[in-house]
Image (cartoon, rainbow, N blue to C red; front, side):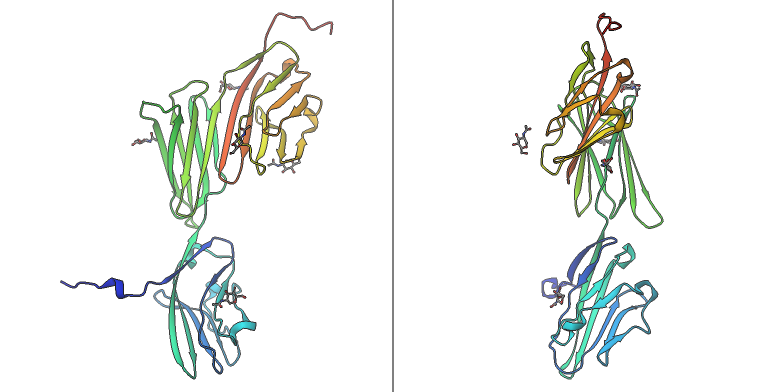
Length: 306
Ligand SMILES: *[C@@H]1O[C@H](CO)[C@@H](O)[C@H](O)[C@H]1NC(C)=O
Ligand SMILES: *[C@@H]1O[C@H](CO)[C@@H](O)[C@H](O)[C@H]1NC(C)=O
Ligand SMILES: *[C@@H]1O[C@H](CO)[C@@H](O)[C@H](O)[C@H]1NC(C)=O
Ligand SMILES: *[C@@H]1O[C@H](CO)[C@@H](O)[C@H](O)[C@H]1NC(C)=O
Ligand SMILES: *[C@@H]1O[C@H](CO)[C@@H](O)[C@H](O)[C@H]1NC(C)=O
């Protein structure tokens, strides 16, 4: 049998790019005389990506996939820089590229492997009856999703995950978890790809019964300075806050007394219309936390005279 002494083989240089962003494929050569440069994508057939000779770009035979998206650092070619700038990176750009450079001193080929990622960005979590659903869209390569609860549940969690690949080859993922139920149980869902991971947490607090016309609703989310907090009431936005900047919706101005730095909400002038479900969503770069709380009016006090 053939035995590969693979350690002796040079491995391709690798570059990781993010979909829709720009990316540099590095390549350099011994600068002498007028160089000839050819960038190709190693597919079958090989695709012409970008060429340069006679001291200028030569794009007559460029593959149309790359039209308008490539450039060299022209001011640096004479110094031996043959790196390629690729803009608006797409999933189909993934693969191996050859950077061929030729001068009076000889020629060489350099192979670069380009990996394209669409990282996990927004991740949503919500409750619907006794089912919690977590989802995210536009991810590549195929993500993995895991659930956990706090405190840990000793029952196997009944989860159902569906993954769908769009025409653009991006993955949409969604997972639902049914019970174990109960207030003060925290559900977390993590979605991970090779590039990054994000977590979303849902927690339902015990309902509060309000007897005065003021109350404090805890958010207990994240507390970094980059945290964004959004409070909603039955799905309408009450306010949002990022660092020191806060925006309260018109209708809620008279009811919002204060919001603490970590997002706890002080309400005043509570009337029966304000009974219902409040949720606080706080998120930072890696994580989203949703805290839901149901507010009911209680007590026998009569308020007609006040
Ligand atoms: C080529 O030039 C670009 C732009 O200045 C730079 O980012 C890149 O690192 C250079 N590459 C090499 C191989 O020198
Ligand atoms: C999700 O369900 C699968 C089987 O349906 C099970 O193997 C897995 O452990 C469950 N995941 C969690 C986090 O409970
Ligand atoms: C805020 O976060 C920091 C670090 O993550 C932690 O040490 C601190 O106890 C938190 N403060 C509050 C009030 O939760
Ligand atoms: C926060 O509120 C402002 C003003 O209403 C709005 O422009 C912005 O999009 C909101 N941000 C979020 C995350 O809802
Ligand atoms: C509020 O939440 C509870 C528990 O999740 C749910 O049963 C109820 O239908 C919700 N009410 C509204 C107005 O959304």
